[in-house]
Length: 486
Ligand SMILES: Nc1ncnc2c1ncn2[C@@H]1O[C@H](COP(=O)(O)OP(=O)(O)O)[C@@H](O)[C@H]1O
Ligand SMILES: O=P(O)(O)O[C@H]1O[C@H](CO)[C@@H](O[C@H]2O[C@H](CO)[C@@H](O)[C@H](O)[C@H]2O)[C@H](O)[C@H]1O
Image (cartoon, rainbow, N blue to C red; front, side):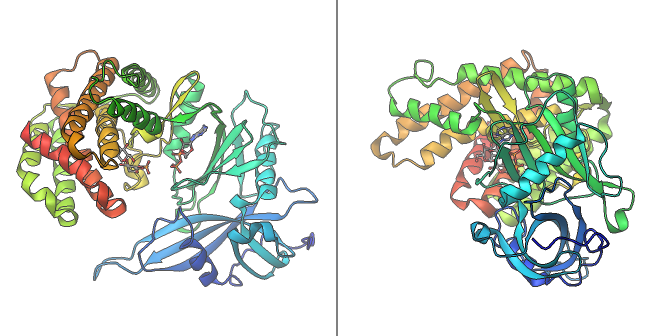
């Protein structure tokens, strides 16, 4: 390893030596880059700092922020820019085991000739990162380091645990350290507090049984114009060893029911009603705890009018992307107009992007994950308090998705009508058990609000599916048709 001479900066304060095309070519190869299909350039690379937990056999691990500027701005509008976190492992020689994460090689002013790899794929680099979290429990780190590791008390990390990078479709990168802890490294980063960390910290300190306890997080000072702001780069929490994804469990329940189409959901071996009940109770507890800590606000008719306008605006934007929505537009606008007529709305801190894929069933009950909020919304909007009924609506949409996603994959043939009836029965049964467990009674205004949020989410899903899974577009579209018919 080319040891960095003691008098060299850590890392080089300039990045002029870095070939931006190498980073461009790497970003387009990753799962987590949000700009796929859009023209962009790498317009700046900032070296944040070296991860301190290095030992003799370790590579140097340096956190870089890569600014991308998109080339698809409409005439006269400022181009979109985004910031991505790309931590690099530096090796003096090629590391064949990391070829899939290779970015390039160059002469670095601080480290000499290096072969650079995406550090999330490198167990040696992840071991440095974990040691840094472990040391943070003993007190503040090196004041000269721009990377600040924070810890919550109460858990001794297993620093010998090997890292495993999650391979699923993710907007971030998650690394499990054995079965002890899980680190989520935020890939697209924004100056300001990350709601996932802020909410996990509150729920952990409150002893909530419905989240994986937070162990710590990593932040740094935001670069450039956002001087003084914090940029949160990663969070560390308990690894839920016995976790099964709620979406997978729901699909299994539906498949069991559809395998016995002559049976009703109540009699099916895969009946999910008990789990839906427990999910409703879990969400209610999380909402109560968040309201107790962050407070609630009851806002007047100007807020309900603004919400109706936002829903209508989302529909107007969606019509340009999903023209099939046009025939349902009047019914949707009528639902949103009822929101505008509501005298008040109560808002609080919520999840913001809740669905069955954000829930994990463990041997000790349901856990809710990923409190970052709706991916499409800017951070400032995701930090705003919102109605808890938006989260309830997200789950109701998910109970609709599960049976229709299974049907979508079936070649039902002559049994199609019977299977559709069972699918609707499964969705209705689990929606009802979930809502009753969440709130025994809903006022008429709450019902109006909930129905509008369900419609609003289905409109969002139409856009999401048309861009990501066009074959699934029929699922939210059919839900909107049912709303319009109700
Ligand atoms: N504490 C945990 N233990 C085990 N698995 C987890 C934990 N938290 C999240 N997961 C799983 O890790 C994956 C990514 O989690 P998530 O927070 O949704 O990341 P992202 O925001 O990048 O999608 C999901 O499959 C989720 O089920
Ligand atoms: O990536 P996120 O989890 O933040 O959420 C986005 O992707 C979701 C799909 O992974 C999408 O959820 C939609 O599909 C789910 C089934 O795959 C279904 O359970 C949800 O009800 C439905 O909304 C989510 O909308 C999108 O923001």
